[in-house]
Length: 244
Length: 363
Image 1 (tube, helix red, strand yellow):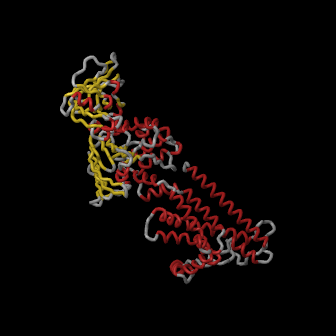
Image 2 (cartoon, chains in turn red, cyan):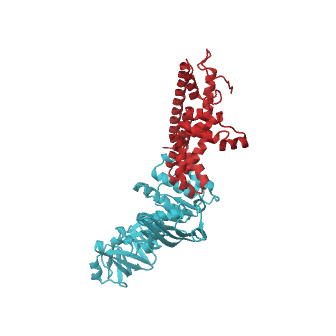
Image 3 (tube, chains in turn purple, blue):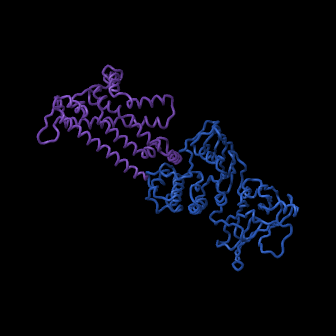
């Protein structure tokens, strides 16, 4: 994708609704959110399973840590990420020296910030699904010759598919709107980390940028509505498929 | 072949302490009121709960031995379990449900065609579980358990969640299953009609302990067991059709040494079936009666007399050949006739009072 280094300015080309820079911000937003869900969801599934099914020391702590982004100011989450994943942070330094991966002030970092922020709600959605699964069905599968893993893959996972989908779509919609953690950890770099909310914020800082901010805000609203609609529809279809 | 189960397990408000060895093949019934520990035994047997102490062996295969540290996981126990509610997988079709265990089994003793035919499932294969009636769903669950190629079919009150018509719909299938596949069955129930039709060997449970265990014919004719206190108490015996008398509209059954006339049956001679002789309907006499409408006057001797104080009655066990009949009479009748263990008596049984179970239910 082209990465123009000029800040987003109100320079709409005559024929399109959005300017080139605005398109870039939109594409970047969709990509950042998609990556956040893609990497966050498997971890959310694991955390939800552990919280719903396992009894282990530190379970309360895990629950608290998972839900922390829900109650912390996003800017604090961003700052904590900087402490850990900044180039001099313990995890950041390790990632950089072993894999050459730099997260702070990159679009990957924007995804990480989004992923952490949407993590609690994805875990909650999946966990609700897991707690709704009739354990008797899993027991039945075991007696029919399925090992633990087999049972999870062939019974549990299909049964919580609606919840996983809801987690993904709701998480995606929320990730599109993340602001505080992203701007703190990944900064506001046009074409790299400047997602829609950051672009709106930037536009509002520029004299005469209200029109652009309004266009981008309208776009955000459309995206949010589309996400909610998709979640609703998919949830219903999957429930129907499960015969409920 | 035998199934031996010995378990001890303590819950906060319930303790299970049982041990029995039952002969197989055949149907072993765990019979008892709710709360007697039946379902706990099944859960432990299936490998879904590890008891405080226990040993379970199906012939030479040890499924559980807490002392030796053996506890096979559910998927390696070779049991087909049918639960009280069908527990069909909602995301799979009937066919998918039926094949779930079959796909994971190593053998192919019990075929798909055979099972779908036996249980009348052929027209349901494409349906989803939510589109099945309760009876259909339970039949699919039975088929699914069978196709997992179990060495023992375990049924935990499979009919308890069904209404009477659905029960009546499934019972014949179970009876057919028993004879057609020759598969050993462990069956849990609190319904006596299921015991009467299906059981060969019965374990009577009472609040986590075994009250009595033995062949159905023996336990059903005992006056000192809780079975005898039920309104529907009565000896349940195996019988064979000896003769049809179309003119008198009677059939003669052989019960070991004794014989019993019943209203004409439409089954071939030699058919094995099962009869229940209600204790309520048995009249005792010390002399053979003369002109009387009762067809059956069976000579025997009193084995034991147990009082039934709640009914102001007494339960008299009468040995007839190798079997015993149970009669419920008044204590007054007992003293008038001077009955005591060893007394010679005639048991008078109205032929219309004998309950004859469909031949497929007999072993």
